[in-house]
Length: 321
Image (cartoon, rainbow, N blue to C red; front, top):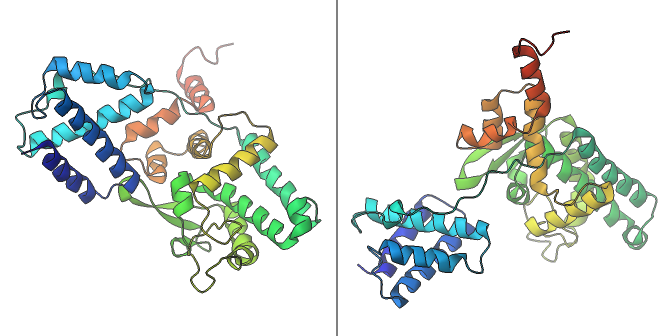
C-alpha cells in the first residue's frame, strides 16, 4: 500500500470521529507534507529509520514555531499509530523518538472586577447609542443600540456558560432556551453539552433577542432566508469567530485590560471563579466539556483564593498566633 492510500484510510477514520473540518484539513496537510518529504528523500513511509526521522524533525523545526512543530508531530504520531493498529505497518517508527513538548502554562484569568469593567464598557456604549452619541448612533441610532445589546449579550453568555469562541459563534436559536437558562453547544469532537446561564445573561439575551436581533436581521441581504445564528453582525449575517474576537478586543481596550486578554480568557475566568466559589472540580469539568479531569485540574493552580483557604484549613501553623 502506498502512503497516499494509507493517508486516505487514516482520514476516513478521523472523519468517523466527527472532528471539525479545520482539524481534518490540518491533519491531512501535515501528513501529506511528511509523506512527500519521505519520498523525496528516498525513505520508505512504512519504516523510516531514526536518522531519517530526526532529520525530518530538524527540518520541520526550521522556520516553524515550537507550537506548530508540536501540533504537527502529534498528527504524525496519530497517523503512524493508526497504521500500526490497522496492520498497514509493523509498528510506530516515532515511538522511539523523543519529540518536543510545550511547557504547561497557567491560563490567564480575569478578576471579577475586570469582567465587570468589560460589562461597564458595554453599558456605556448602550447609553451613548440611546443618546445618539457616536458616528454609528448619529447615522443609525437603532443599529447602534442593537449592536450594544448584542455585545452585552455576548459577554454575559460567554462568561456565564464558559463557552469557547467557536461555540459562541455557532450558537443558534434552536439551541437556546432563555427561560430555562440553558444553551446547548457542540464542543470538541462534536460532544454535546449544556451551558448554564445566570439571571444577568438571561436578561441580556432576552433584551437582545427582543429588541436588538430583529434590527440586525432586517439588514440581511436575503431576508427571506434568515440565519438561525443567535449573534448577528451589522449586515444581518452570522457573527463569526473573527468578528467576535474583534468586538471583544475592542471592549478589552476600552476597559483598560492588558493585552493578551482574549475571548478564551472569559472561559478560563468562568472556571476559576466557579472553583473559588466552592464548585466541585468534576462539576466544572462537565460544564467546560473536558474529556479528562486532568485538563480541568489546571484551574486549581490559578485559584490563589482556593489554595490559601485549603492551606489555612489544613496546615497546623497556618493560623497560629
